[in-house]
Image (cartoon, rainbow, N blue to C red; front, side, top):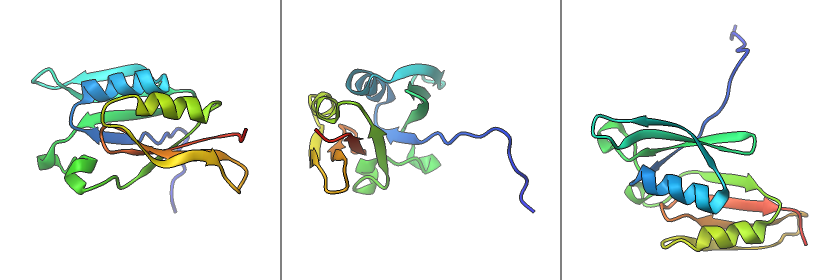
Length: 134
């Protein structure tokens, strides 16, 4: 029988080449708040946790010896991060304003009743940006 946990959270961890640069990007583009940082022996963070609304996610550096590979190491992103926002177009514009970010799928009204699209951030991670149609 599986024991039920009374407290649990899923904390996606995005592996990136430069956690400091990624943290600044997610703060500027998404309004994420940095809530935790654990520096490694070299002073470079091993993990930076961000809060975004009621959710949290983390970024960590690529460390191939540990099996921590970035999208560039893998030849693309293996996961999609999805974020629901009040203004998909504004969020998409802030995300693509950074060098290296790009529109993967334009943000448009979709037949399933949402306004959504996909953005590839400067670190290769894919984000579905979704909200109410206009």
